[in-house]
Every structure is written in C-alpha cells, then in structure tokens.
Length: 478
Image (cartoon, rainbow, N blue to C red; front, side, top):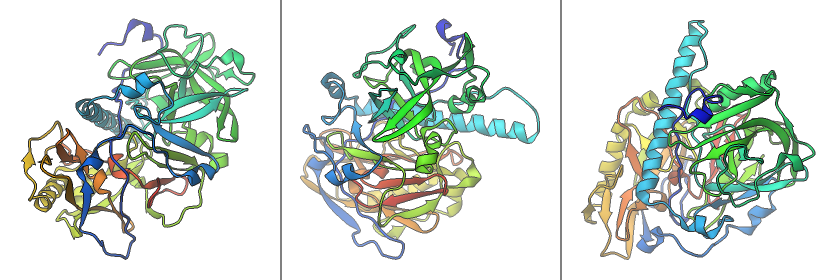
C-alpha cells in the first residue's frame, strides 16, 4: 500500500493495525493451584449472563486503595468516561473478529520482521531496520496526567505496543475528535522536544518499527497502520503523572497529524518491553512490574496497577526468553477439558511458541491443539444442538431453548506446572441472542505463534514481573 503524500517525509513504511475489543462477558472463574485437582468438571451458567448490561457496575472499592492503580474502563460501555455517543457506538461481533484477525496478522508480520533482522545480525551484515508492525490497541482505557500542571487524558493501553503518544495542539495537519481537551505543549512548563541527534531519537526504530525523521532539529515519529489510521508528530519529553506518582522527562509522541479508529480517546499507552515503553521508563519506581484485571464486560470496571501490590495466591510461570524480547512469550504445556488432559504432545506447543496479549480477543492455538480442544468440548456439549460457524468461530451452539447451560471446564497449564481454570464465560462468546461459540480459534499452520487472548484472561489479575522474567495469575482479580 502506498504511503500518503503528507506522510512521506516522516514514514518510510506502513503497518497493519487493529482495533481490538474485549468480549461482553460477565465475571466468574475458578482458580486451581499446582497440587489440587479440578473440583468441577462442568460449570452451570445462566444464558442471559452472556450478554452485556446497560448499567455500570464498578469493581471492588478496595482496589482504589492501592497505590499507583488506575481504573480500567471499556470505552463502549456505560462505565466509560468518554461521550455517550462513543460509548454507544459498539462494533458488531463480525467487526470485532475481523479486527482481531488483523491484529494476529500484524503480530505475525512483526515477528517475521524481527526474525529476519536477527538472522541478518547473526551474519554480521548491516541493513536498514526492517519494517515491523505497530499494533495499536482498542478499547481498554485508563486516565493519566501529562504536563505541568498536569492535563488528565483518557488513553488506550496495550501490552503489544511500546510508544506512548497523545494528540497535541496546534494539530498542524489534522486531529480526530477526542473527549478530553487536546494537550497543548505551550501550557506545560516542563515540556521539551527531543533532538534529532539524540540517542533516544534513534530508539524510535525499535519502538515503532519505523525509522524516525527530522524537522527543524526535532525528532519526528510516524506510525501508519494497515487500516490507514496513523499518528505523526514530535518526539517529546514532559512530566507524566500516574495516580500520585510523578515522572519528569517522560518520552512520548506529541501527535500533530492523527487520523483513524481511535474513537474519542486521546492516544495510547505502550506497555511493551521496549526501552521507550512506559514499563521501562518508570522502572526506577515500579521495577518493571505491573498487573491488570480487565473488565469482564463493558458494564464493569477493572484496574491497572504499576508496581507491586499485596497479592496472595499468585502462580508464576517464566517468560520464554528463548523466543526473544519483542513480546511477552509464555510456554503452554497442556490443555484439559473437565479435568481430562487432551492428547496434545508438548512439541505441538513448543514448535509454535506462544505469547500473552492484552489486545487479541480470541485465543489462537496450533491446529492440532485446537482440533483436540474443539472435539473434547463438543463431546461435553453434545446435549446442545449445534449451530453454524460464525466468522473464525466454528464450534457453536443454538441455546434458544435454554435458560441455563452446563459448560465443560477448560484449564491451561503453563511452564512450571502453573494450572489455571478458565471462567466458563471466558470460554463461550455469544454471537447472537440465541447462539454461543467456543471462544478459541486454530491457526492456519503449525508454526504460527499461539496467542493467549484477553477473553481467557478475564477476571484474573495478570501479573507481569518483567525484570524477574515471569508472568503470574491471581484469582478473583476484579
């Protein structure tokens, strides 16, 4: 796809982009420790619980007492702080799944780019930085402060992105409509631009997958997504405020030309592993440690905590360091249905590898693993009539004659014998008022990366100890 003329100065390659969205599911899940057996082989749920509510039901008040903790909202739900017209503009499930598939393709493209670059480095041949895919994100929002005095902004957060950016005045080219007032650098007494000649300017290549440019001595970032959404602007420094914590000289993108499917948010926060991510830039305070609990449905809230919190019952699995540091790699070792381990060899998971991603909705599995999961799930759901496939979902049921159903327990085991028992409402997704489908999909080939998506993370507190090289799961997070 050709780059538009007005981006040609700043962007030398384009990327795939996806607006991902969480499922509309209600909170409930069981948790399993290392040495206990699964107690329930089936969960009974009300069919009506699969559908969203219209009234905001905030999460536990005790969460608000944590330091460095921000409330997480779904931008399309009644708890959203955005305008009601944005909250009401909920995309269809077809759109959600289409965007989800685009994101998966973006992840694969970025991995292919990184692997190609690594092979080149191994041969000691110098080539220009390969174009990666800047993934963007969709619909989980938190509010943070930028500037002195601070201006509070509602920003999307995403573990698959690195650079934090927000729209800035004077919007030299174009700005989309956002709910908060657009940040004006002139009103901040701590704002400054990053020089083209600084080493931090060159770091944009890894954070965005795109070589930075220069304008009147100031470093310029540019991100263009596959759906033609983009952000271009000045690479800058200013004071960042997270709850009551203040970070001077935080590096971020000050967007002067922005357009696309960002809704009425002010930009996005990158929770990735790059040196320019918010995780790395706040490491002196938070130690590269954060956790989140995603809202189970748009009518509830979750939270994002930067730094360690007093948690009990966290099980940790090591990140798979052999895969690299571009994503949060994990090792799936087995899957069970109703307490019975599926006949999937460990090599199936090992050959593909896997990541955990806050922006991918539907978990992706190697073909052999998904086939085994689908077959066992069908056996457990055999008393319910089958329904036609819907988009990428092919294990579906007609529930029109039922008010409650029994759903087989699905559990995942990760490296270190960490076993988690998924919520039944993170196992099924409603595709209409009468039909629900298994919320997993198979990859097209055995070598494609597996992705542990956000539906399967619902109601867990997911803990990222980046410095310690491990990922944790805690029960009943929100």
